[in-house]
Length: 265
Image (cartoon, rainbow, N blue to C red; front, side, top):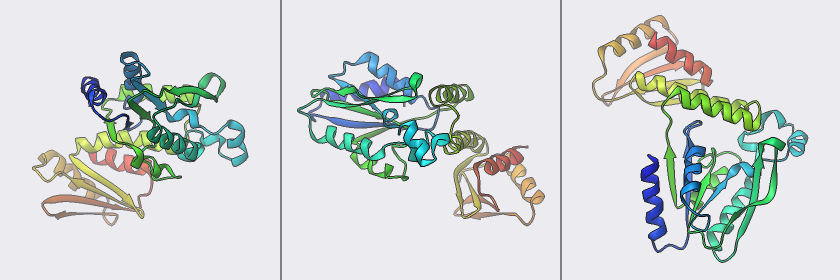
């Protein structure tokens, strides 16, 4: 979704009858959520549109150390999820008062309480974060509270590399869960080249579902060559007009990436 279209939708919400609308900005790592938020902040006053980033709800370093999670800072279970949900519930229900929330500061590796504010008159609240669609550690309670979601896509390596640098500058070394998300973005790019529309990885079985319409002969040959090379570990079949490649004994994102690289040749 382009920033121009986002602005049009925000203006429509501001002109509408609803006293307050909650919008979640979600997307793959590096998709540019933070950049979009910055542009929204420049265009609208806080009493029109307020931004609530989930970063402020990082657990303190002291608490992460006590939980044995300091090296995984940034993972789904290193946030005060219940505190974040409580804030979203309050701002959704009560429009008559200001609501304060913590803001994370990289320079001190900590959040400052009550630094952020949602003014009582703000009609559109933009909720920004990586885990708004997550099912882990109570994050699943967030999505039902949102009135709309905007999905920001990423499509180039430069933007992804920029995101990685920004993440490491803000939070230090990325936990393996976040690195897997980034690697999955790169896998998705490779899958698109191969005309793969769906990927499943469950119970150590990888399945690649190819598009139903005509696939270039070059790609079909690459897949057949891969199957012949990996006899005993994979099978190729057709179902409902779609080509499906199944590869056994695959359990990680790096292994998925290796499979895609091998097919591409």
